[in-house]
Amino acid sequence: MLPYCVTYGRILMIALVPFMLQNVFQSFLVTAERPQLGLVTTLVSGVLNIVLDALFIAVFRWGVAGAASATALSQTIGGIVPLTFFIMSRSSKLRLGKTHMDLRAITKACTNGASEFMTNVSMSIVNMLYNWQLMRMLGTNGVAAYGVIMYVNDIFLSIYIGYSMGSAPIVGYHYGAENRDELKNLFKKSLRIILVMSIVLTIAAELLARPLSMIFVSYDTELLEMTTYAFAVYSISFFVSGYNIYASSFFTALNDGFTSATISFGRTLIFQVICVLVLPILFGPYGIWYAVIAAEIFALILSIFFLMRNRKKYGYMA
Image (cartoon, rainbow, N blue to C red; front, top):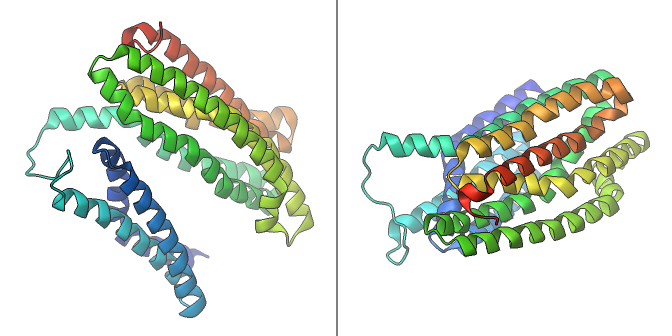
């Protein structure tokens, strides 16, 4: 297993810079009023990854190296396309030009982006903690069930993340232009949209818990039952998580990196670590599946606190 991991990781590292560019340019494309290009680039990159996986693994028989190469090439395309656009375009409001060192701007950007940094770091730590707890209490089946949930979880949460990232530049624009009425209107509409999405996604996840689990673990009845139960429980968190994701992104757009990072840090690390460690003690091994629900509820309370506390400061609520 270790040699496979090393091979996969080494190949992916080659495409690390293009991967970073692809993610960074997504926000720039929205600001440049070209969100369609960002969407098309993401879709093309994803489809290319699937096609190359089939070619390299099924046809060329390259195995793990082929899977890694397919991902690396698709990420490279995803980074080069927007880079080329900003270099070549003459109609875009944003273009690449000569740079100079601006430590103040860099520091502000890093501070404001602290929440996204904490989210990614925290996810790695929490995943390791989950795997450790599950292996200790439920064995390999628990780890396998959690792996399936994480695959599907990304699909559902990406909808919240996509909306939050897409609306952030608009929030920042209206706040910077001091259009308080537009900011209030956007905030109210966003809450309603997230409410609808949370209801739809939660119901869809509950209904699809078994069918989705069967795609990955239909070969083992015991594992299938555990995965179905775990995913059905985990899916309840989708009703709450959208608000927390949006709140963190909202404060980032308002240039309040501290509040955004606090919400993100609490949601993705502090609350989850506490719940993953405590709930199994109180409710037994299966209590771990409820950890994310409890963590999201605590994060929602924190989000509401900051939203109410800062409503007059930023003018998004009366």
